[in-house]
Image 1 (cartoon, rainbow, N blue to C red):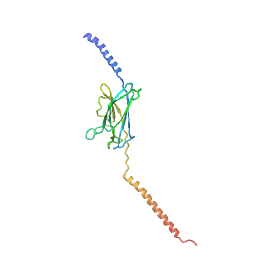
Image 2: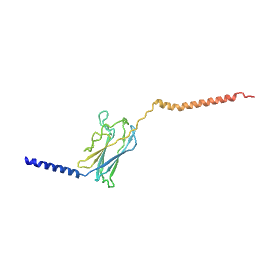
Image 3: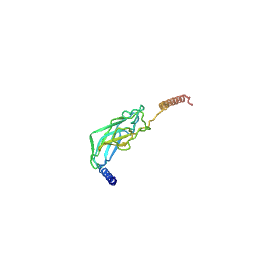
Image 4: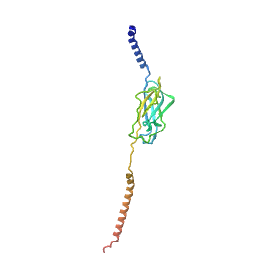
Length: 213
C-alpha cells in the first residue's frame, strides 16, 4: 500500500503531462464563416438565397464536409411541430479540401436553395433558439439563426456561426387617406374649371357694357 501511494503521484503527473503534450500536438484549425443575402432586406412572403463563404485562416489544411443552415424563423409552429423549411443541410461531394492560409484555394462558397420568409415573420420577430455555445458533434438540433460548418476531425465536428436576415418595417396607409389622395387632384381640377368659367362669364359681361360716347 505504501509503495502504491509513493508511486501514485509521479504516475498522475506523467499522465497529465502526456495529455498536455497530446493537446499541443493536435493540428489547430481556424476558419471564418461569412454570409451574404441576395437582398438588403426582405418583407414577409419574399423569397431569397443565402451565400455562405468558408475561409481557412489556419496553418493546416481544412476539409469542409457539409453546411447546415437554421433560418431565423426556424422553430416550432403553433401546433408544436418543427416548421417545415426552417433549416436545410448540404453535403459537399467530394469534400472541399481547403489549403492553409498561405495557399491559393483556401476558401469555398455555397449558395442555398431559395427560401421563403414566412408571412408572419416581421422586423420585430425574434428567433426562438440560439446557436450552440461551441463546437458540437451533430448538425441536427434545436437551433435558430445559425450556420453549422461540418469539418474533418477524429469525430466530425460542427462549428456554429450566428447570422441574421434584415426584414423591412411594414408600412400602412389608411384607406381614408388613400381615397383622399385620389380625390384631391379631381377637386383641384373642378375648382380650376369653375374659376375659368367664372372669368369667362365676367369677361363676356364686361364686353356687353355700353360704351361711353
